[in-house]
Amino acid sequence: QSVLTQPPSVSGAPGQRVTISCTGSSSNIGAGYDVHWYQQLPGTAPKLLIYGNSNRPSGVPDRFSDSKSGTSASLAITGLQAEDEADYYCQSYDSSLSGWVFGGGTKLTVL
Amino acid sequence: EVQLVESGGGLVKPGGSLRLSCAASGFTFSSYSMNWVRQAPGKGLEWVSSISSSSSYIYYADSVKGRFTISRDNAKNSLYLQMNSLRAEDTAVYYCARVLISGELEYPFDYWGQGTLVTVSS
Image 1: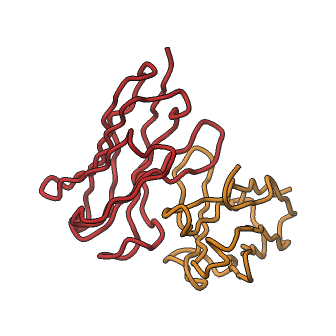
Image 2: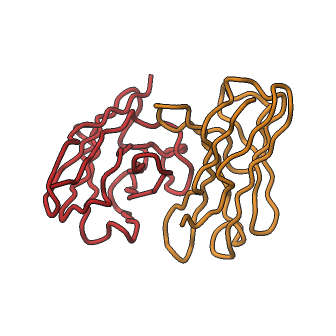
């Protein structure tokens, strides 16, 4: 099991809004460590999507946003497009493990 | 253009060793912390190891501690991962990844290589 828990899959129709949750604990998200999000298209390397306090690397559309509360975080995607179909991973730092931890990943299907 | 190119993967028997390399270009390699992240077939991402820009700080996941060694050669713009005592559960695509902010270690990874597949099987 991953230290950060994500739903295995989510789906939505084009144009809709979907959210992906990421649940951690008091040694990672709950300890105040930032949560970062990656997108992995089929057969490719992960791509940094959102980091820190809702920062988006150049080229990432503002349809992607994030939030954090307590021991959980969420990624929201609005105006869903076919090209958003991918696996999404959350990442944070864990003080008890002294290292980075990832969520198990969520497969987004655009219906 | 930032480029990270991994090499050295392949088929190895349990208990064997392998050394992965990551050739970096398009940025000042010596200024950035680097990481290895792996992904088992059909599975999620797993952080393996981090190394600071000057190799002063090195960290490992518990799953590889004592078996894997991360290193870098800033003169050659290269990152390495020496993997010993390999197990079947080490089978994965191994990615090298750059930390977003130069001089920092605890930031996310903004550039990733294409990965190299390591298969541990008899």
